[in-house]
Length: 89
Length: 117
Image (cartoon, rainbow over the protein chains, first blue to last red):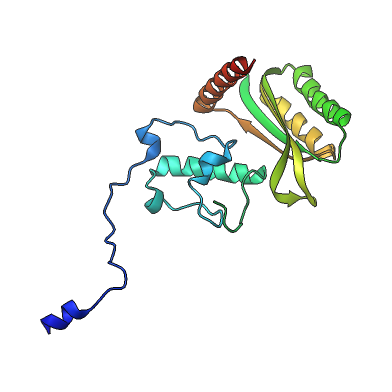
């Protein structure tokens, strides 16, 4: 039983996800206000389809996640960010 | 009690240069006419829109930061809605952090422009 365990050949070595401590970038470098006018910064919080990434992935705290969401929605209103797209990056 | 506001509006690209200037000066007069005071103004010019608005894919962006009485915003917005050259607008009341941020942004914009000169 044990030996066929080692016979299993993985095509690609299983990349174990190294658990890096997620931190809230706003608390870390003391950003207090999320500007809705520069889309480049906001793009970091959007996925390829242009949707807002959840907190569990970006690791931002609740207070700043709301600010980011409001800024993204304002940027979308002003057509600086698309509502939905493909290959935004 | 004056608050600090920030308004961005997009004008249709069909307009000629003169009409754009005239539209911008019209809104500037509305703000200064009623006791508002313009702090900063930026013209981002013709920019590509992320999605077509009214079948147009580009627009003239213009930003005005000003301090005014709250009652003036109502007038400003009705003017925006009535004016058909403006296809999209957004007014935003700056809180403490926003005012600080725009102050900083203005300084380094000025610093950059001085460097270019």
